[in-house]
Image 1: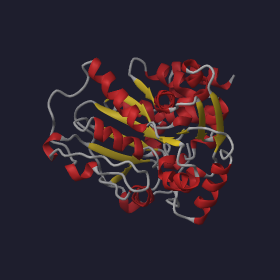
Image 2: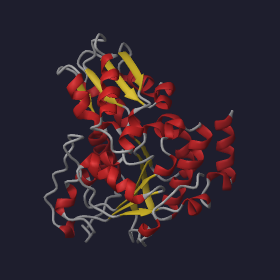
Image 3: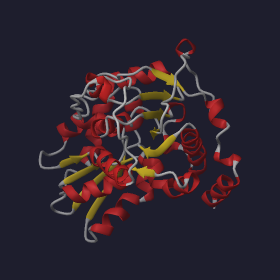
Image 4: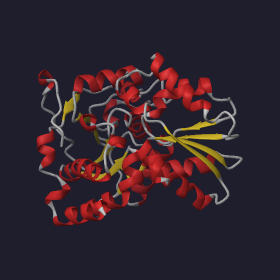
Length: 333
């Protein structure tokens, strides 16, 4: 794991929830768009969000590196009391979902990519679907394979957008560079006759205003986050794994208004503080930069952002276990 620069004055102590929680994992700030939808759908839950900003962008990592990074965080979350892991990263979901589920079994592990497939199938009327995603997700063709299980005759156009995640991580979604990058990608769909554009990365909702500006109005822009949260909520309820009583958390109703004009996703909580759970935001990088990026993207971030020490994560490396090493060997083949 990389040794990343962090802001030492922000090395504040944090306390994890004292009951089982949902762990949310992403490569950086993009997954906050998913976290907001979880707060809207299941506000009574406790959450621990980990943004691995130190090692972003995940799309630039080899499958072996990605397994060690995401596996370490997932095992750490499991050790600290997670009752489920929600992957808010399509790159992990597209390349390693089978291995991560095997590593954490029997802990439930949910995939944002699977939610994206069902959302795209739901919204398309012509079966002509565009997908924008990271290079790794695009190369895996996992979205295409999933969609074609439901729509065998679907026409799918997938485009990798390597510039998008760095722009979002740096909070540059309103910059000339972002405008140029989005305009270039949108031009690739100008003559493709799609009716649906699936956002295949959780960083991309921050670019919806620009995407909307340069895409025809008839193209539906689909962010799978809302469908994802509803799917996880229904599954946990079916397993009788949702809190029966509403706790006194660290969020208030106004904190549910996490997102924003940029992503066009607003949570509409109307509950009081005693009805809402606890949320801890952690980053492996610089928490001040993480929060600044989050604020620039999403208007506000309701919680302090704390550091998750990479040295601590190393002790949870999947390579420290026999099963983890066996999975790593399979990935390397």
